Image (tube, rainbow, N blue to C red; front, top):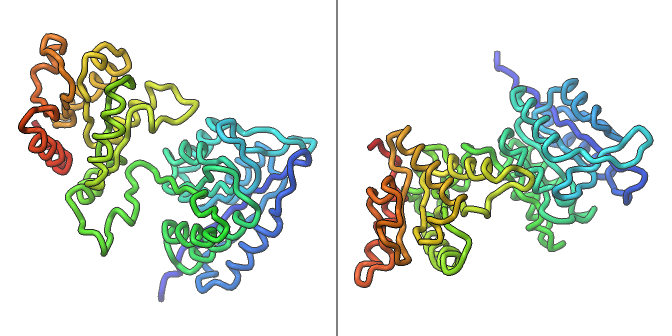
Length: 359
């Protein structure tokens, strides 16, 4: 006797307070329902709905239905959160940190994907993706027609038995004529390797891609530098573009931080989610307290793991006596060398493409 595939519950949470602009939420949800009913694998999905959602309705519905997919449709406000309804049907914010904490709880109950079909919801998507495998948000305002087109194609694809990434791509493809195909963004939990990076028939699989799968890091490299000149120009105009040519996924200090979270926590997450950290040495860097925290953190991790996480890059004149002993004892890569700069850069790339190894 064949085992029936597990039933997946899609929970739709809708909110459109009376004091906000009207959205075509009924049409969006009707289209999802109709798409699931006609799908080849319709027997594998169950649709549940909750309207005029208040804060307590949000978590009660997830407790009641134990969904694998949560779809929120309504208004977003960027960093402040998403808009729900109060007891009078007026708007009330569910703040980003509260939303993220809520989803952290339900991550242990089989929740696989969250769709925030609301304007400016990328901030929330980024936070929630620390706990949930796949989270979709919007990086700007999205029109009603685009929101509906994306949703219909996304769930049609899932109901045809395809994965979230394929569904996301097809959803975006339906927005090209509306010039909104860059509005939806897909965030993945650290450790989840996007399918396009696991294999791509048109691009040779490099050591970088293999290592990312093997080590389960979110980034290949974190760049620690001081945001002053000439360091900033070197990082953004020279080092970053050169490394991106090798398909490295790169986190730059200050650029991958989540708004509303303490900077020290952001830095720790960026470094721990990166296989290696490049330190761009300069006198200004060594005088910066936040930069010191970054290099002490990654060097401590290297010692604890007995690994070679830390790469020192020299592009500016700096005397050895400016470096603490713990850094002066490490081999440096000199990208400013008069005759060996190209060879030194190749050495940097080779180090980034090799797995972490015990020292």
